Length: 320
Image (tube, rainbow, N blue to C red; front, side):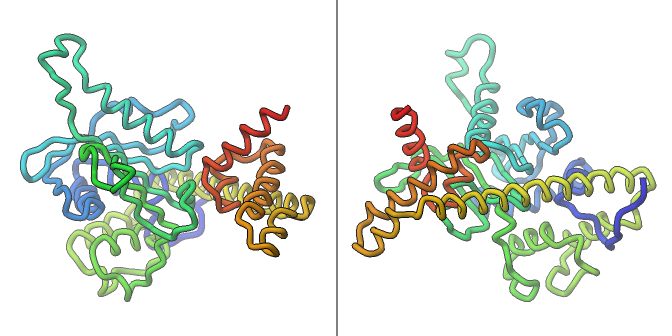
């Protein structure tokens, strides 16, 4: 297989690149440093162990990198982290399922009364490269740090289950704008294969090791082959995702044109929120009828909540 266009450093958001940098005991200091920045002081990981069983991965995810990690904090506490990095249908529900599986698997087969639900903390970390957070409401956050909390006043209800989504597409800082190590990690993750060398903004021992490890010229021939395959797979996935997004955009524009968006026009003229909602509902109905897009895709494009789309879908079902 012929080699692809060269860059000095490998793309570490490919399956091969991510596993090479973060997936071995030899380089676990890199993963520990990255994870500690994501926790922003809430947790300080002193050591981690790579669990051998990627037990929550589905058959359709074969070939992707999923890390199931047991971590030891600097205070001796143990907790479990799973790192996911692929775009998936029903992302939020899948991550909730994975977290519940990690929790349920801690239960002993017998004598649960003595165990008394001594559940370890569980965190799901999702590295979103090239795809967006479903139902984000148009907010341009690059870090979504999520926990269980009271709806009324926001106080944390349960501290030991958390989700951290890293939305790389929203991280747009230039090198000169990097102010902390979290910025530096995200900049490197997004731009590694475009860089020519280690700049003064990144000159730290942990990043020096990372850059040395990621040099394409240091890969063995068989490693280059695996990397090239992984890079092609990433480009193919990005092409498919881009085509789907463009198709969704075109379908939405067509739906709005065909429907004349009467409710939205009336809402503008009369200042009525219900008019705008009615107009969006008509667009959503047309997109749902196409049977080509997910609920979250439609919600993001129409700038509404997933709940609103589901409500429209339920009303359509009643009318049938």
